[in-house]
Length: 338
Image 1 (cartoon, helix red, strand yellow):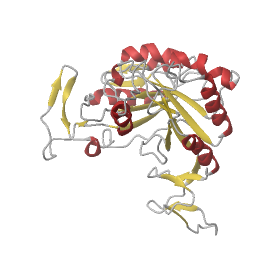
Image 2: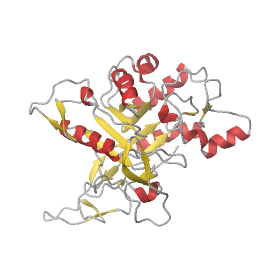
Image 3: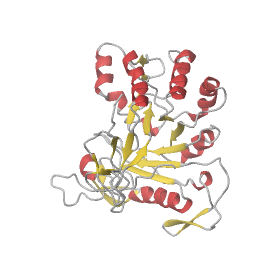
């Protein structure tokens, strides 16, 4: 659990339990399975990863955290630099405007900040839809009640098992999901997009999103986003101005490369393709990171040689997540659903 998370698309992370079973290529280098907590538990003979391993319920103190965040909900963000934080933060200050009022402005940009809701990413160290005997209906009922009561927070449930969601969760919300519950699924390549997105679209969530991280292949998601999008050369374009009135589509796409010592590179064209599909259809696009590999490593001292594979027709260098950053074609993409 991380209060004030460094992940660019959320404000906090919350794990109600820790542990999972790997189900697809995105799981191969799972950071959660090798993090400090996992290693410590493993050293004590308590394995948390695998279908027959234990699941560690987090402490009662952590389960209370969202209720505290819900009370402390006076958050603001700068529309210019993207900074987010509490209204009492040193990052904002009152400045008199032409009407004699004192709106709060960003100390870096001198732009007036706007109110915002806090986002809580659920299950960064587990899967909220995993079937496991230690994850009971009573636990899910507690979590559902928390989502309902913490109405000032947006809870982001991310799963690689969207086909389980309705059977596991709808009963605890009496068949109707609250507006502050967003549901997403991980799609790392076309195979899992074709399998998981149709299942995601069966979930009656106000916001449905994709986490294409780590992105391991070229994706065509045009069947599941509004409008009528066609491929034209290297890019994507909308061939209609009327869009699509359907409601069973994806509202938000997050994309990113893999981090860690065994990280696999992502072809930059795959990121650009997702960005262009979203731009053509009006879907919010958020580029989280390049990960360990980047196209900008040529001038960085001590970098590893260029990598070439059948899917990498662009030179890539392994320079580390911090140096590679999160600029795609020279700019940040910080899209969020309205």
